[in-house]
Image (tube, rainbow, N blue to C red; front, top):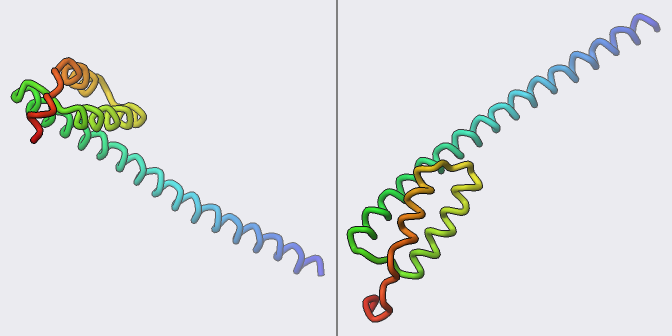
Length: 105
């Protein structure tokens, strides 16, 4: 009986170890995917800000709706850990005058 009990404990320990290793692999893969997605979002957001910066500085003004949209995008960018390049563009975009309402129609 002692022989069976000893091997049962070893078997349970082996099964628990295998489950832990499996879960660790899954968690590590998920963390890597999240990090990749975060980096991708930062690059896409930076590119969008660069495009919007050149567009609205060329036009010389920005609509209130677009300014609010860029503000929301900027806040999310900062939550992701975004850096100073977009900070500079955001500040410059905020200095642009607002488009007059009649220009939108």
